[in-house]
Structures are given as structure tokens and as C-alpha cells.
Image (cartoon, rainbow, N blue to C red):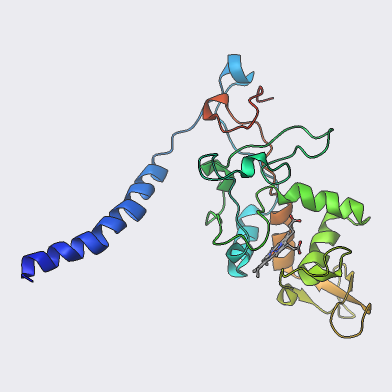
Length: 238
Ligand code: HEC
């Protein structure tokens, strides 16, 4: 093999994938222009700004640092790449008759304010794009506040009825044992290790609070411009 062919081979093997997988997508993502609402179609004016309430930036960091993205995706794929847009509680809200149909495909603005877009590596667990809704509903079902439910879930995912086979790992590093002088609220959590049914109280640390706030913010229900055409059912934005 001549030296020239060797260099050409190197470029073809590493240069081309680098160009197509990194440089081109990066350039495309950088070029995102603001999207405007159309008054006649959307009934709204101005620039589309994604709305989410919660500790997005720090929560997203905790989510990344604890490897949640390894098992959980956060992307509703376009119809050419998957069929989750039809899934009532993944792609948005549609399950109950009183829910507004918010099902839609993910877009780049969905990760606004997050240091990394956690689209995820695998789908061992459910997609969390709209987890906020599901967590609130589950919490109500168990008669808990949303935060209380998320803390218990994070510490003992198997402690809930119907969830005894969960493989979502417990995150004890985010909690501490209550100390006598602690000012924070302790949560009573049914422990599933050791003695069966034994109740223990734990105090969620700063990271647990940020993560819970982040998880509860995961709702893709804000009005998006008609021009983006990502909605399952195209209705006026408001
Ligand atoms: C080893 C894979 C794995 C990892 C890592 C993992 N999970 Fe899970 N997770 C699962 C599985 C499987 C389920 C479904 C069973 C259940 O509901 O517990 C689940 C369910 C959940 C749910 C409930 C989703 C719903 O739709 O009701 C939440 C919330 C959640 N995980 C959060 C997390 C967070 C936060 C982390 C990181 C701290 C994490 N998971 C890490 C596997 C994983």
C-alpha cells in the first residue's frame, strides 16, 4: 500500500464519519433560528419560548451524573423513526378523556437550559419526556405529594404496589439519615432491604431536591407554533 493510499484510507475511515456525525449535526444545531408564532394559525404572536418550571439546569446535571440517561430516553421520535407518537402517555397526554391531547414529537427546544440534551442511550426504562405528568398522577393515586412520591421512588423503586420487579436502581447517595438537629423535612420511606416492611425516614439532599424538581418539570405541553408541525393533532397553539 502506498503512503498516499494509506492517508486516503485514514481520511475515509475517520474523517468522513467525523464530518457526518459531528461537524454537520453541530453546524445544523448551531443554526437554529427563533420560530415565530403565526397569529392567524396559532392565535399567538411573538417568538416561541419553551416553558418549563423547575430546577432544570442543576436537576439535569444530577440526572446525568447518576447515569439515568443510560436506561431512560427523553425523545419522542418522528414517525419515520418510531411509533411512540401514538403512545398516549409517552408522547404527551391523551390517556384520559379529560386530558388535552398534547402528543407531539420532540424538538431541540425541549432541552433548553440543560447543559446536555439527555436523549438517552437505551430504553431499559420508560421514556421520561413527559414523566412529570405520570409522576403527579401516580403520586395522587398513592395519596402522596408529587415530591414525596419522587423521593420514595428514587430511594425504593420497588416499594410501590405493582412495582415489585422494578429494575430502576435505588439512589441512596442522594439521601441522608435524619439527624436530631436537621431542619429539613424527613420522609418516611418503606425500606425494601433488610426487614420486610420496616419503615425508615430519610432526608433528601440538595441533589435529590434538584433531581425531583427536574423530573417533575418533564412535561411537553406548552403551545408550539403551527409551522413546526410536530404535533400529532394540529390544533391552535392556545
Ligand atoms: C438499570 C436501568 C435504569 C437506570 C440506570 C435508571 N432507571 Fe429509572 N427505571 C428503570 C426501569 C426498568 C423502570 C420501569 C419500572 C419502574 O417503574 O420502576 C424505571 C422507571 C423510572 C421512573 C418512572 C417512570 C414512569 O413513567 O412512571 C422514573 C421517574 C425513573 N425511572 C427515574 C430514574 C432516575 C431519576 C434515574 C437516575 C437516578 C433512573 N431512573 C435510572 C430503569 C432504570
